Length: 150
Image 1 (cartoon, rainbow, N blue to C red):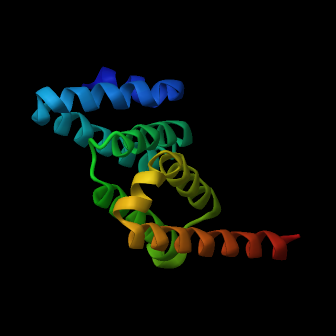
Image 2: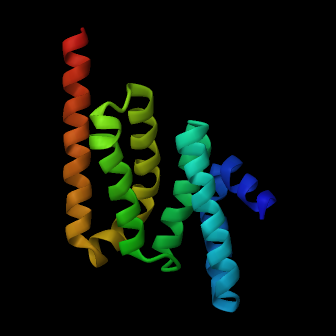
Image 3: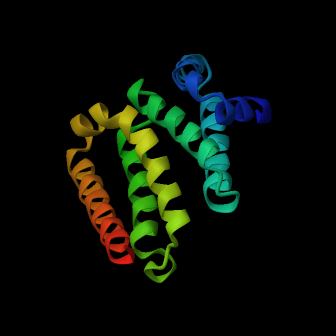
């Protein structure tokens, strides 16, 4: 399991291959696919929150996005995960998420969103709209901070 997650975090160009592999596994062994996905989410938390590893975070989110795109992960689960990350950006730590953390969270979210967008629009349109509004708010706040620092 650890070797698979290491490969997922280090090979961004293979995100769709790993997503397809996990989707095929889910057809024959759903419990193993759940175990792999759970390990991926735990690793995403580790990379994003503890290690602040932008590459690993983005790569894992790309694979999760591909799992949504392939129909292996539910769009509602993915959208709620993204909404929780966005809420952390906007209100976490009393709204005092620092610039490096904010940039990391935005990059991570965008990596998965680019892949899962079509399914999110079809299956959870309201959540998708909320995600876009939250991103718009974050980008506006970020732009304002950058503007006033100059």
